[in-house]
Image (cartoon, rainbow, N blue to C red; front, side, top):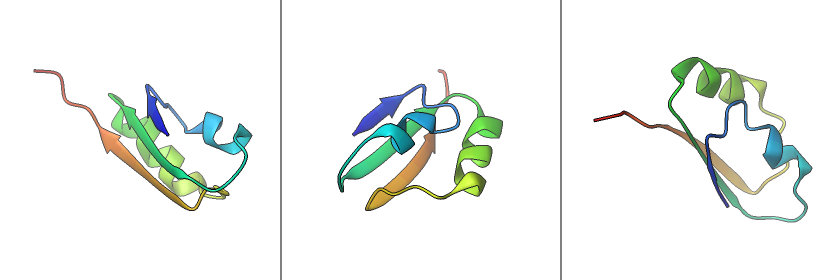
Length: 53
């Protein structure tokens, strides 16, 4: 699943099943919080910082 504007990654906790979750956001602070929070039930997850050009 691709979550654009993922913030803290909250939506990943609401989803069922095993899948790859990729969260993209423009806020490094939100992505840091999401990565530290952990506890995701997904098979794989990653967070990417989007830089505006």
